[in-house]
Amino acid sequence: MSRAVILTVLLVGLVVFGTTSPAWAAQLDARINPNADESPFAINYLKTVFIEYPNGGQLFDVLRGNEWTVAGVADSSNPGVQDLMNKLNQKLSDDGSHAKITDLNVAYEFFLKGRNINTSIDYKVLLEGTLSGYVITKDSQRSLVDLGWRGMTVNDEINIDGVEINIPINMLRDQEPEVYAVFAGTEAEQVLHRPIINADFILQQPLTNWHFLFDPTGINVDAGTFGLDESISGFVVSSWTMGESSIREGRQVERVFTAEIDADERYVVRSVQSSDTATLSLIGFGSIDVLDGLEIAGVTPTTPEGYGTTSTGDFPIYIVYGMAGLAAVAGIAFFFVSSRSLKNEKVGQQGIDPSRLVGYQTSASSGGYQTNRGEAQLKDETDYQQTRSVYENTAPQETTTPPPTMANREEAACGCAASAEMGSECDCEMQGSCLCDASCGCAAEICKENAQSMS
Image 1: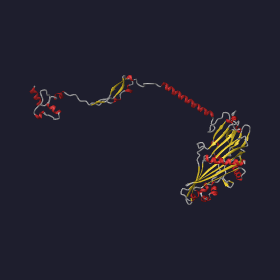
Image 2: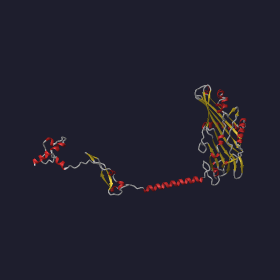
Image 3: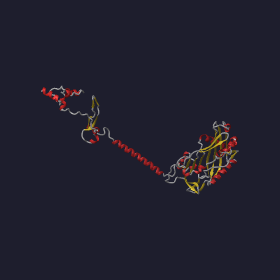
Image 4: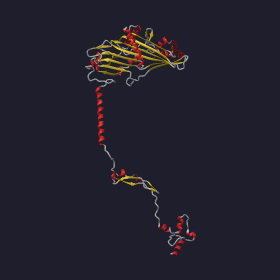
């Protein structure tokens, strides 16, 4: 009865995970205790397949509006689960790991949803179990823990209670034979033959690229008063996380495989898996190392004296505090200098004292129009070259009239000269008469005679 309850809870957990969690391809979560013979782990495998039929056709007629779910749970007493556990252990051994899976529970759910333009199939497999044999050596000072078991992968078919849970196309073979007949022997079959239970990428990503943090809560004297797990009492907890796309870890993107099929119509098949993610916790302070090509962790109960890290790896904590101190000193210095500058800032009139300036007009009148332009200059010659008028570089343009000569003034009394001023030239010689009086200074002979006769 209790086993049935456990399996039911496991299935409900898988359904909840499938509706609330992101579609990671593989998601590993494990806590390893070097002081225990066994430690729990859980790993989820997810994949989504899309069958697209934009032009209709046979698959459109078969899949549109179709919907079904295949789900189930099983434990290590099931022959199919035992076969899966054996194949997983063989893969761990091939990877060089000494760890073994000693207990395993499986929950799976496959959901098909047919639409007007495509059909999606969600594949979800959840494995929960226990690991053993992960401690390589142990003494009073340190333990060496095997971490090379992360690549939990099976490439073969896994049948549990008549349901094949590892090769996606087999589900179509069993549930949608007409669809399988269209894909058989085509490139789509190759795309859909990639296994669901695959965590190779988690193993291929070196632990030195994972984010590392440690939690010293367990070593506090009063930690037990807060309900702390007894397994970590007196220990720190080391954690490694993987899944971030970064320069250090590399760019992680969705793994998408596509195939096109030309049957009665053109069909497209896409298999989509998001990047893997993992969280690995180890009770004690773990330092990553490699032993004969196998990644291991040297574990001590407490943190080595003087050691400090950040999430980016082995980075001395005193450098972090030193950088923070320098930033604080720089901030204080900045505010001090700013404060002094404000106190020394002059208030009021700046520059030349207005009492030393004198104004004068620089504009000129034009007819009856007078502008009001002017400028200021220093009363003395101090710094004259910096304050002199810009108008001094340009000589004023004035029209000058030559002063009248004596002859011009005398010709004003001459009728001939007066006629010339009015535009009708008078030539006394040609007219034979003079219109001038005795004061005329005209050079004409007739004017001279007339002046003499009148004198």
